[in-house]
Image (cartoon, rainbow, N blue to C red):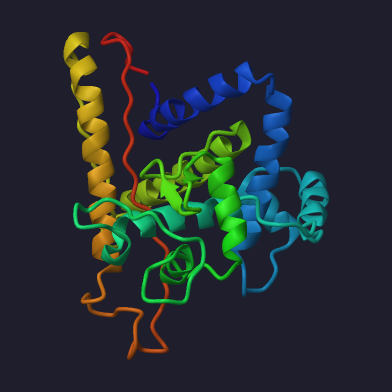
Length: 275
């Protein structure tokens, strides 16, 4: 009989393995990657303590000592220098989220204003969006990313017009990077909750086992709008300068900085599919 842990792993791994097979990535390549990750995680768990021996790592990971030695030497090699592949995507996403959430960048109807790329006057510009989002790069760099992704356009007055209320990647590589960040944080949140030792993170889902397809056809755009409004309102609340612990003037210099990710996902399949 399968243990609860095996049942959990099967459900988590099944869509991953199905995707890898479609991409032509077989067991041997995945096995070698998993072994490297086992060693990296085991070493990371010992950070700051006395370095574990190869025998100790072998015991913890189940990998033989010869492989441990080889993988450990590989893990010690410096990472190749290069730009963070998510840097531009993250900056563009933060800029869009700030643009649609902060009151100074919205008109009287609550819609995002058309903004001049630069400006030092009383009228808000895209430079102000970058400052509010704490993005310390040239505005041109972020604008080019948004133009490339089709998120903004320049109108006849050379003002930036926001076309979509969220930064949605279109290139396959960017989609995979977004997927990795979202799923990784979701799993960290879920396993944190399984530990049960601290305040749990949000982990809720709405599900129906048998709902008519015609009803879903009508519901999909409504659900997408609800999700968009939830994330926008959450961002407005987080950016509210009246919140205790704001980053504005008088904020404690010793305040601990935290990172969060709040997500919404949707999936549907045949009623008989329980995978």
